Image (cartoon, rainbow, N blue to C red; front, side, top):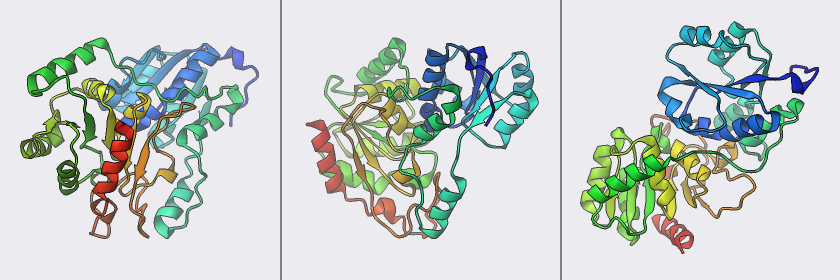
Length: 338
């Protein structure tokens, strides 16, 4: 941990979190508190494909987008950073710090505790959210968690874009609805087609489906099968999808980036846990605000089988999702809608 003669001498700080959507959203409370409590010029380094997540963040003075590492290094060297806050803590972020030769603060990733739990079934993880571990690392700066949760900024333009597309595709564009998130970076975090069909088959609520181009065909298949379902998968930008979530009564989602965006927008969530687990520290986070939400999971001896998700179930059965009780999910959903 670096020593500081005077925190007041800090003028320009670089925050690093290169990927991905949910992980970047989880950093936003740190960004806000650094900016407001220290009054510094705040820069943020991120991979090009995820830069849009922070497009409208009012607490970032300059966003540095990494197309390739050497170009990013050269770009960052133009600035006289006083400190790096490394919220990624991998080889790439270490190389950035080494190239700039600047003091660095980072956090405890608890790699061995995660590895031990996933590989032995013995859980020694502390019962705290990742955000809390981020703020523990900022103690030398005197920066504290303000309790305001994550930030995700949806512009009026994005709201208008979503609502115009809803008029185009939705025959009843003023009806209240539930948002169902189809996509996830890893297969074992996604609610499978069969379970989506079961849930939609027992539910009476109107559903709007959220997803990217990869989920477009799945969304169309579900929308064709159920009259109370409209799919916007592959039809919206990231921020327009956030506008869809913002207008929803409840969000049903797996462990996805859209889940963290939903929490940032203070939405009620039915959280569907697959191969990961809430005790790994990446559950819906609302800060000090109390927002009613539910967790739906199947207790198995084999989960969590991963800390980030898998391309397939290691056991071949995928019971963590396939054994989810859609009637219990329906009950949780109706409780949150009421």
